[in-house]
Amino acid sequence: QSERKLTHRFQWPLQKYSGHLDCTEMRCQTPSSLLLQSEVFSAYKLHCTFKALIGMSPHGTLTFVSALFEGSTSDKEIFRHSSLLTPEMD
Image (cartoon, rainbow, N blue to C red; front, side, top):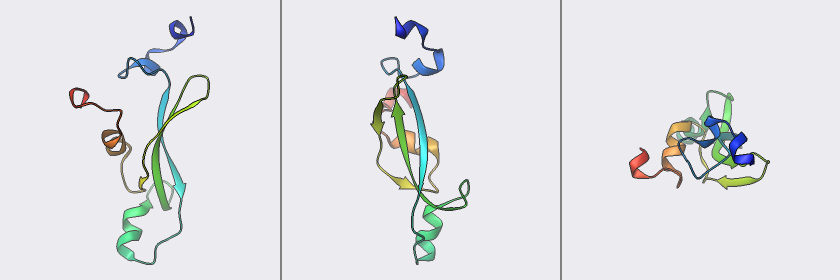
């Protein structure tokens, strides 16, 4: 019954997955290396971060956590590297 109440955005493109996917950023210590700083710097947060893709069910249960990525990595790129995307969905 609760599946019928879910909106379309919760069900596509992962038909067997009901929930919400979103990338979140966590602040990290600023590296001393300028090269590393440029990789982990987030233009959105304006400091050094790591990012992860988080999945949550409609009821608030944590269902998926990806590996950590540098703060400069786009959300699309993180999703592409997650185990949730299959070749036919790309």
